[in-house]
Amino acid sequence: MPTPTDSAEEKKPSRNFIQQIIDADLAAGKNDGQVHTRFPPEPNGYLHIGHAKSICLNSGLAREYGGKFNLRFDDTNPAKEEQEYVDAITDDIRWLGADWEDRLCFSSNYFDQLYDWAVQLIQAGKAYVCDLDAEQMREYRGTLTEPGRDSPFRDRSPEENASLFAQMKAGDFPDGSHTLRAKIDMASPNVNLRDPVMYRIKRAHHHRTGDTWCIYPSYDFTHGQSDSIEGITHSICTLEFENHRPLYDWFCESLGIFHPQQIEFARLNLTYTVMSKRLLLQLVNEKHVDGWDDPRMLTLCGLRRRGYTAASIRAFCERIGVAKFNSTIDMAWLEDAIRDDLNTAAPRAMGVLRPLKVVIENYPEGQVEQLEAANHPQNPEMGTRTVPFAREIYVEQGDFMEDAPRKFFRLSVGREVRLRYAYFITCTDVIKDDQGNVVELRCTYDPETKGGNAPDGRKVKGTLHWVSAQHALSAEVRLYDYLFGTEAPGKAPEGGTFLDNLNPDSLEVLADAKLEPSLVDADPCSQFQFERNGYFFADPIDSKPGKPIFNRTATLRDSWKKKR
RNA sequence: UGGGGAAUAGUGUAACGGUAGCACUACGGACUCUGACUCCGUCAGUCUAGGUUCAAAUCCUAGUUCCCCAGCCA
Image 1 (cartoon, rainbow, N blue to C red):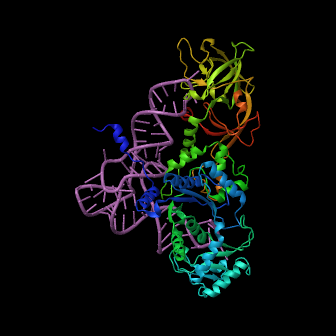
Image 2: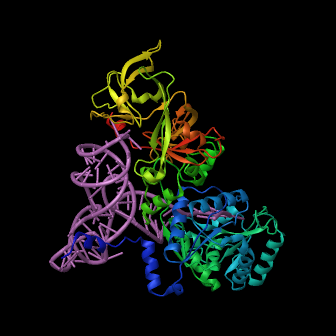
Image 3: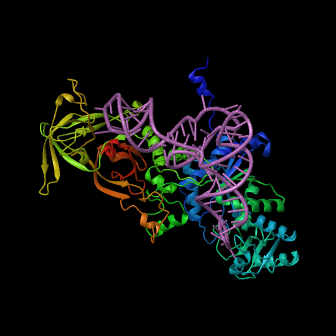
C-alpha cells in the first residue's frame, strides 16, 4: 500500500527547457557526451542581477552535467571597452561563485584566426569589400517590409577583394570608408542576412591588442566562431539573438568548423528597477546614485555592498526558472532570497535606529548588569554574548504610542512590556518638549523578572529591543529602499524620463543610531540581524576600526505595519 | 501590410493526450522572550473560437495580444 512518503518520492524535480534539450542531446550521443558552456560579457559596463541569471544558468549547467564553463570577454569594439570593466567583471563572477578554472578567454585572442577565416570566405566568393558609407549602406539595406538592393561593389573578384581587404588591414583607408561584408542575400526577410558587416575600419586603442589592428571584426562575425573555437556545445544567449542564429549557422557552415548549438532564453526583468546598461550608466554619470556599487543599484557590486550574499543570488536565480516568456519577476522574490539566507546565517544583535530615552526610575543609579543574550535563538551553537543594562536606556521611537489601540503590544502609559533578555518594565510617564514631542519615557521595572520571565507566570505580549544609554555605540546607519517608486520605471511618464520615477526616499542616513556595544568590533562585511529591524551589513569602504557603518540589506517582514 | 519568437492564478514556473502542481505575493489562523522565523489554511489559472478524441494546457484550424529585428553596438 503506497504511503504519502512513497508518492512524494515519485515526484521528479522539474526540468527547464534547456535541461530537457541537453538531456536529449546526451541521450542521442551528441558531442561525445560533453557539455561545455560559457558566459560572454562585453567589457563595457558592470554586471547586474540580470547577468547573474545567465552566469548561474551557464555555470550551473556545466556543474550539473560534469562539464566545463568558460568566461569569455567578447571584446570586439575597442571604442567602448576597458580593462577596468574586465577586472570588475571577473571580480563579480568570482564572488558569485562561478568557476572558469583556467579558461579565461578573450575574443580578441582569436583576431588572427578570424582574419584568416575572413580571407577564406573572400576566396570562396562569400565575402566582399564594400565602399558604401554607413548612410548609403542603410539605404541599400531596405526596410522590414521591402527587400534591399545589392551593393554596387558586390561582384568584385576574390582577387580584388583579397587585395582590398589586405589594404584595409594595412591602414590604407580612413575609418568608415570600407567594410568587409558577407555575401548572403540582400532580399532576405531576415535583415541580419542582408550582407552583414564582418569587418570595419576603426582606429582605436584596444585594451588587449593595443594598436596592432585598425580593423575589427563585428560581433556577428566573432561570437559564433569564438564559441566554435572553444568547443562550446551549448551556446546559451538571450532572445534577441534568435534572429542572428541563421547568420551564425551560415558562418560555421561556410567555414566548415565545429557548430555549437545556440539556445535562447528570456532575460531577467524585475519590478521597481531598470536593467539596461545605458540607463544604469546614466544613473552613475549623472550622480543619481553614488557609483556602480551604490547599494541601491542592482549591479552585482551594488548588491554585494548592500549585503546580499552570493548564495542568496544563486538561490534567487534558481527559483525564478528559465523559459522563453518575457517575464517580470516581483522584487519581493529577491528580498525573500536574502532574508531566507540571512535568517539562518546572521547573528542577532540589538540596535535602536530612532532612539527614545527611557529612565527606569526604580533601578539603582550607577548600577550596571551584564545580561546574557543568544546570538541566534534557533541555533544555540552560535553562542551567547553579554549586553550591559543600566538605569537609562534607549528604545525605538516607534515602540511607544500615546493613544495606543488595544492591539499595540508595546509601550504606552500604564502598559507593561518585556525588554529582551532583561526585565519587564511599565511605563509611568511621558515627558515632552515645548512642541509637544515625546522626548523621554519614565518607567519602572520588576526586579523579579530578570532575564525576561515573571516568576508569577504573568505574560506580556510585547518584547522590545533596547540599548543601554551610557554604553551605546553611536553609529551611522543607512536605510535603503527601492531606487524607483514605480513598478516599471523604464517606462517614462508622459513628457518625462525614467528619472522622474526615482524614489526620493531611497536613501535615509541615520547619523546617530544607538547600537549595542559589542558591535564596536564588527568587521567590515560582517552581517547581523538587528532584531525587530532587519539585516545589516558593515560597509566595507566607509567603516573605520571602532566605527562601523551599517547598510540595511533588507527589512524584516512587519505584519504590524501592515495592520495599521 | 516582411521575418523570428512567446502566451498556464496578482507574479513566476511545472505538467510533454489521462486528477492543472509548486513557489513568491495577498489574506486568515497557530506558535513565539524578534508583531521575525516556523507551521497550518484561504483566495486565485490553461489568450479566444472552432475541431479531433472516451479524454486536450498538451494534437489540428482560424484568430487575438505581447516581445525582437532595418548599428560599421553587443
